[in-house]
Image (cartoon, rainbow over all chains, first blue to last red):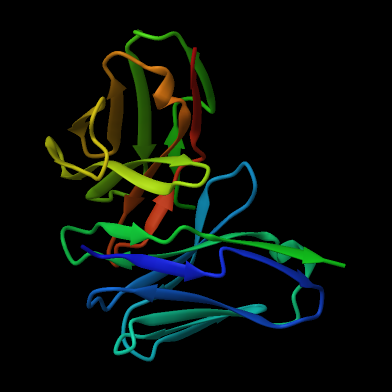
Length: 111
Length: 111
């Protein structure tokens, strides 16, 4: 059974600082996704990582995938308040399009 | 602009009532999903459909059923609502790379 573990689960950081969220998973998979959820809202897709070594960047967020280590990272550069949200990673189950989601990392960026 | 819509944002029902939650996507996606999201329990897959009239149980199907008569529409049915089904329900569809697109969610309260 595929297990997906994110850490930390809660992260409070100051504006302007850098930090990394980690997503580990337990069985082989070549596809990993990052989603963002704002309070009271639904999830929206941030990044789709489709192969080993994939790196995607959007603004102050950069995601990478190491399939050999079964690890993805979401790096935050010079955080701003607007990045406050819950971030989920999800890993493809390799069966008919389903994914297993991590528990989410709730990020709070303080001035 | 891709879109997944859900029939209600908020719904209040009584114990024992039959409840229908509807989801429509306009992206011609094969796969559609129903999740529930509860604090501390993350996102849990209830049912999955990979084609019209085709469905597969997710991780927590008990107490739920689904219907997919048309490609764009996926319905979640609570045959006899119970208080432990109070939750946020999220519908999603996925396309080519299994990246999921979520609807706005339905917050269901069962009294």
